[in-house]
Length: 379
Image 1 (cartoon, helix red, strand yellow):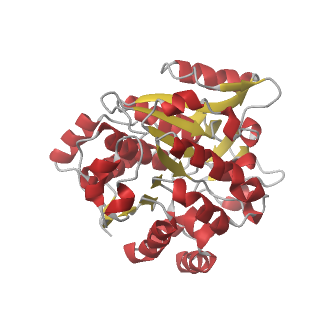
Image 2: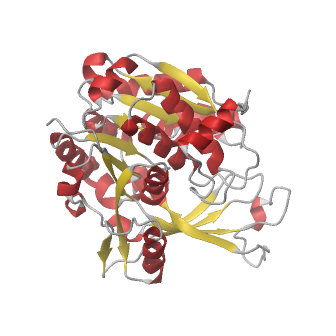
C-alpha cells in the first residue's frame, strides 16, 4: 500500500505509566544498603510526578518536535489514571487512551540518587492486559509510522512466545505502515525473565523496520554470554560505561540478519550505534519512507553523546532520543547522520530535566546549540 507523505502521521502505542521520583538531597552516592532497609529512614525532597513509559516519553517527544502523533496506551479509572489523562490532555494528546474500568493504572517509583544507577519499583497494571485488538487499526492505517514500546513489561505481548506481538506487527505491516519497536529491561526473576527472548525476537524482526533497544537489555535477551562478560568487566558500575563500538556491532549484525531493516542501539552515556540493512530490504520499509531510506544501505556508525550542561535525571533519555530519531526520519529531508545526531542531542537535552520532555529542544534549537560548538563526550 503506497501512502501519501505530505502530512505524515505517527502512532505511538504500548506501555504508559505514572512515574513517581523522590528527590535525593545528598551530593554523594547514597549507600544502597540504606535504601529499602527495614527500620531505616532515608530523607528525601519533594516527589516529581510525571507520566512515563514509551507512549508518554517517545510519543510526547515526537509531538513536541512537530510530528502529528496519536497516542495509544491503556489506563484505569483510578486516581493515577486521572493524573495520566490530565497530563496528556495538557498536550492535546489524551484522546487515544484506552480506559478500562477493571484495571489499575501502571506506576513506577523511580529511585535515582546521585552517583547510583536508577532503581525502579514497578506495577504493570493495565499494561498487562493491553493486547493487539486494543489498537485502533483505522488510525494506524492512516499513519506513516507505528512505534510500539516495552513488550517486556506487557504480559500479553511476551506470553506464548510473543505470538501476540508478532501478529500485531504482521498486521500493521500489511497496512503499509512503517513499524518501529523499542524494548525495556527484563527482570530476570519475573515471568518476563523466563521467556526465550532470542526466539521471540527472531519471530518478530521480519516485521520490524526500526528496532531501537538499549545495549544492556538487548545483550540480556539475545546473548547472555556477552551480557555476563560485560557485567564482569563493569565490576558493579553501569555496564554502558565500559562499552565500546566493537561490543555493540555483533548484536546489530545479528538483528539485521533476522530481518530488522534499521537498528539503533542506545548505549547510555557513551552514545548510540546505528546499523542499516541492504538496499532491497530498506526499500520495503512502509509509510512511503523506503525510497529515501534506501540510501542508508550498509551503514555502521557509532555516534558519541553530547555533553549536557547538567545531569538531573536520566529517566526517559533513551525514549526522547528515539523520539528525535523517528521524528527526523518521518519529516524527511535529513541524512542518516543528521537523524542519529538529533537522537544524541535530544538525549543530552533530556538529562538536563527531571522528566523525559521538559528539557527537550526543537530541531532548530538543537541545530543552534550544535553550531555554537556543543561539545561531545570523549572517552
